[in-house]
Length: 430
Ligand code: ADP
Image 1 (cartoon, helix red, strand yellow):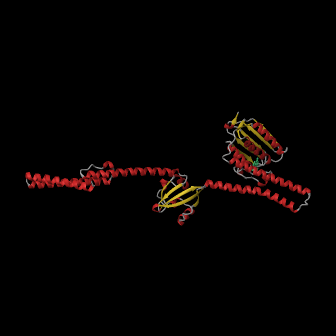
Image 2: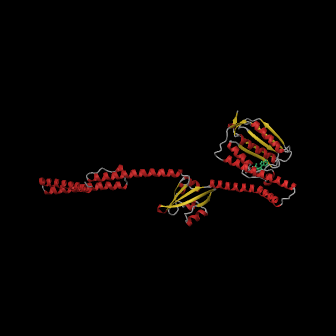
Image 3: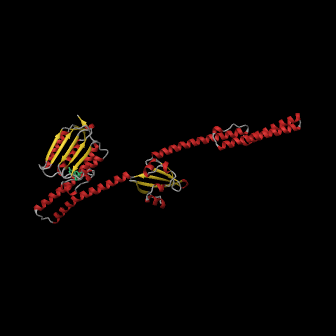
């Protein structure tokens, strides 16, 4: 049956019951008594309805399913329907709160910063990454204008112009951020920040590397091309001049070959797929061999000594040989004639240590932290004279990184340099 009909029928039944009760009383005790009792009954009915209306109004002021009163007659139906509505509402709210919590958690896990702003750019909400990128603090800054919090002219201009189709590249607090603004419902806006500092740095390194490598290759190529041109234009060149040209061309060709080999070694060392081999390295035999090579390079111009006391290591024998060889070669190349070079392999509490010490030209303090950068040279012309590629110490750094070892450099200009390689105890092998 329809609810309205139930309501009307039950109200009519109640009125009829009161009226018929009053009529029966009037029949026995007189019309007046019947009228008074009928009036009292009707008044009671009205008071009861008012009482329920009052309870309903109280409940509406502070609705909670627990406080909903029990009703009588048609009120039973009304209160039970209100109760169901309220329960449904509470369930929806709980579901909504759960969704909101999940949404916030997802936003917290995003790798990008997200800021929600109202129509006039006041901060409503942001995730922790956005706090980190833009130096915000949600608790402190909520309700503040974002342009007052991110005070850079580029950002303010971007907001004023409102050309949000193209993202903004923003330099902010030593970071490079790509900023997108996306308008959404009720003229609110979402600001998304993506940190590209690291990828920009890698890009820059790659660009620098290509520029440096091209520059390094261009010089020997120019020399070779020059001599080839002379040879083709002057076929009757004197034999002695021609052979000196050929000698220079061979030298330049060798220089290019060394450079390409060093670049290939570096790229192999940097590639993640190229795992460090774990073989036993006979350090004493390796260092004796490096000493012989060093003596050949020095051609008796230096006094080179070797002290062997340290243990054997495990790692890549080729890589370790190339790193130590680079250090010894540098010591010879940057030490004038009659200088001394000491190679020491010893044990220590922190692990075995290799020291390559020379009495050469030395390096001033401001260069030391940059020596392992690719193509970094203290004195470019001297490095070329001594056939350096500028990649030797970059290779040393990568090899040592791959073997969990550390490079320490001490040097005094005019006195000499000391390159110490500290290996971890875990690399020792019996
Ligand atoms: P290069 O091929 O130019 O020697 P490296 O990467 O091996 O390149 O070394 C970088 C720079 O460090 C060199 O150009 C040189 O200026 C400096 N250097 C390296 N070893 C020594 C050393 N033992 N004494 C003085 N300077 C050194």
